[in-house]
Image: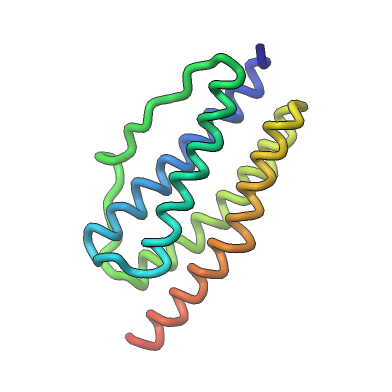
Length: 137
């Protein structure tokens, strides 16, 4: 059984992924299947699943995803892209911090992989989205 600090770290991480997933779904509902949200929403679902598997491996019930009714889409696609850039920066910092909360090598690998996806794939895509939407404005 994992220690309480590890469980808290996993809980914080999955809540962050749930929030991003719900937010990006709301953006797609409002603006249609726009890139990069339509691609990254699928990645966020995979990220939550990767964390869910760690809860299962540890024999711990993961937190419920209750974010759908707690988030709303921004007023513009530019604002959505800008907020997503900020969200990915915060997400990466969270993962850097949470890596210090566990010694479990499998959990550390998952947290590292999710941080790297955020920084190396999601963040650049959202930055391009900001640039594209600024040119359109």
